[in-house]
Length: 115
Figure 1: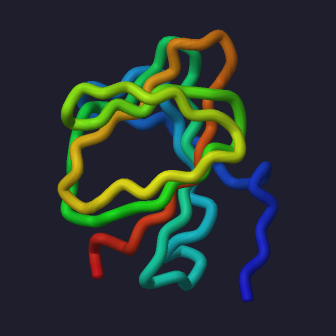
Figure 2: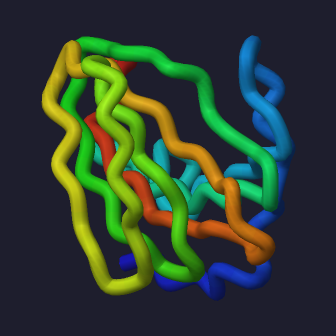
């Protein structure tokens, strides 16, 4: 069993194209012995966003702090806030944005795409 304090996990900026003011912590992943599942904590600072993108794997998201906007591939924008959970299907276009004044944090759990 692996037990970690999230506060002690290194936070790193997300440097992918079309990403602005987003950091990520790998809370549990392959380095911890989890070969099939990866749990990540993203923080989107005010004015920040992930790219509008898609990938073959589905993922579940739980909003941990603040509020943000989820953009669907259709362009529909939905505000989400702490206590809400989402399922993003495989190949579904999506984006996370923070137009608000406080940080927006969410857990994102995926199957390890390298498996």
